[in-house]
Image 1 (cartoon, rainbow, N blue to C red):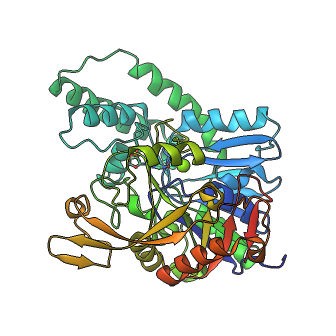
Image 2 (image 1 turned 30 degrees about the vertical axis):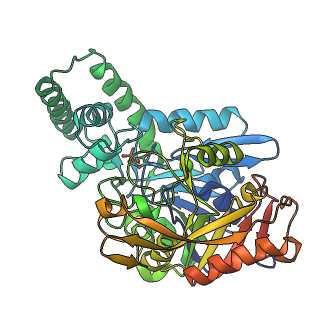
Length: 430
Ligand code: IMP
Ligand code: MG
């Protein structure tokens, strides 16, 4: 392994903010040194951007490791799979010269996101008093069906009777829901379901037992990377509920969502952006004022990779990062997009929140309280120099190193990687 590479036979890469931390880039860099890459939760709501040479790839369901020739890529049981989107992505990669055939496996136990789940997502958002601002990909309804024990799994696709029963029930449910909401049925649902089931036949050829495959690979001396989607603050249990996604994005979800035991995981890398962003509704305590928000969005290209929505931007939130370090059991941090801050005069970090009940230093459970806190900032001098070419910490301006030192101190987690640009080589391995 090259110097500065991350040890362990089974590592997890997890987002520590509200998603879009740059996990795609970090996974791409780490994928070089592993044999198998598996996604463990989420679905087509994710958008992982990877730059290779002069090309940009945006992955939604297939693990970001796929751009590395020869690596095995798995979608674990914790994923909810949109089969139409999946093959669109699969075929588009093939068309761009990435050999995918034979390299991608899908858990037999993964649930399918069906066209009626997408419709339900839309109905729920349209009618909700408390809009979540979902990606509209049917994620919530698919996980609801899973928890409600009426979901359609990959393994079911081989059984026509089971498919028929489950699909009929799913269609009936959305139709009733739409009638209740006085919504028009555009008549295209049956067609979309039919197309999904045809794609489902193709999917059966990729079905596998991901947990078994991963354990066999480990026993054979191979290394595994479990790739998370979204981030800790969007975790169903630990995030800013109800403004969350419907799965466990955190490291615990990597075990249940890929079908291995937690003791198999030995390394957990938490990805944090050098500042914070959020897309969708819900509080962002360190959010900028309008002018600064616009400025950072332009500097960082902060637009959703899945929906194109502008991301809200704010300062680095050390309360959230420290919380993420704890609930994920982080062994190391990867800080991304440090270069985006290059031109700033001063840079702030939130170290506490002022609340009506006093100052708090732990990320609160009450999302409504979180919406009203006033962050306490520590302000550091900016470095106002380009960092794109830095390949080791010593190459960075001293103010940038001081900033990183402070992040490390406040999160009590060693920084192992710093990303200073979109390219693969623009990385500092500590
Ligand atoms: P859902 O996952 O589509 O149900 O959306 C729930 C919330 O998670 C919304 O605020 C989305 O904007 C957010 N979200 C879902 N996936 C991502 C992602 O990959 N990056 C950032 N935010 C996401
Ligand atoms: Mg993203």
